[in-house]
Image (cartoon, rainbow, N blue to C red):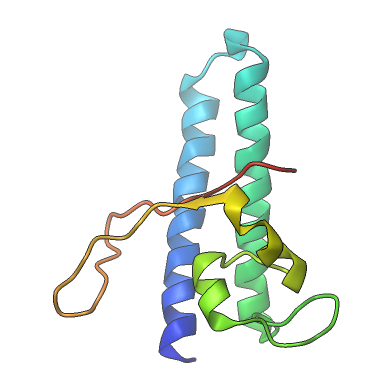
Length: 124
């Protein structure tokens, strides 16, 4: 596995952990009376978790990094920004995704420990 894919996998695993923690926190500490807003947020968290799980599954089977429609290779530079992309069309909506930056490391290595990286989707 290349360093790029290793870094993307590490980021996806951290995303999964954060999303699972959000779901756990919601189930344990959020009340149902908080209304539709919480329901919408919860829906998006579950949707994003499904996308992350799908990407990790594709990594396990060796099909990660390929367009699900055409079978063509997806650009690694774009996958670094949007690691849950399934096809070339997903990159057309990059302005609808927001990425939290990872901390700067002077030696060129990113310290992922404890960092929460999350991609929020503004469309369904």
